[in-house]
Length: 404
Image 1 (cartoon, rainbow, N blue to C red):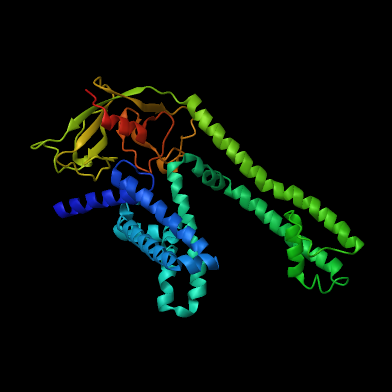
Image 2 (cartoon, rainbow, N blue to C red):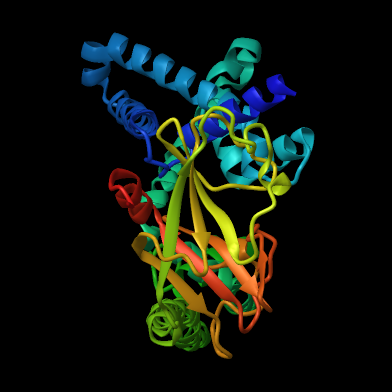
């Protein structure tokens, strides 16, 4: 039991270290910096090595930077597999690993280092494997943990994906129809230019997307008239996805503004307790502790690291517990807010894991019908819920300043 507990604690620490944006300890901050530097160094060397003069002068340096950084990517991938269960709570170890390795980030992480080593076993495919190394650049998207603004594009594309796919489908149909029409009109006049339907598709695509390379163009009167009509249709249709995405950005901004307007906020009181030798809670999990009605353990500070308590987390000697009580009067954490979900609140009927909230913000308490509900990722928020939220900035301030 103790070995399992120690491994669980080790997993939590490793997961906090490899999770970009978790900066509550010097080790986590250092790992984030190291990851970013390794990726940038790898990409810079890959770009610089395409210049013959630079490769002749610094070829050895480029080689060793590539070897070291790729080895780092491989170690990072192994650490993420070992801590996958911390990312996918409620899954078995095998299921958690499966979800990670098949996720978008899991595939990117794998392709960041695997193509480097594959030519050793399959020399014939070296050129193809080198092409996959460009996938490493997508690791840069992990820095969006430091900026909520960088998640805005993903949120918009996710919410508007149905409309965007529909508009792309219409554009694809128009390209196909335009290519067939132009091929029928121009093939006899330009058999070498409009040789087949694919040549016409190239012309239709460059015309509808307003690129117009000029390498293929109609010369017959009917073809030119058709080209004018298709060009006008292209201007109109290509603007549709742009309008959808623009509207999505406006909606996201209005959502953030509306949140500030409709949420009812009030200060929430906290007390702090230290777990000393002989305390009855030592060795017990959060779910085994009988808390008084209206109170909850909101935060655990262990070895200088901040943890969000889940039901299976065990209390250890030396832990510092941040306990939230509805009627507490001792001490106050000013930046923590309580949100009461009104009738038109955008969080209504949404799971906690699907909410558009800051990566630096956590929900630690939900009160429904006078009862406290554990705020796990699958909990669906309802009208009338009282939701307690706090930010990492609040945590840092709180852990650095005494409450009493």
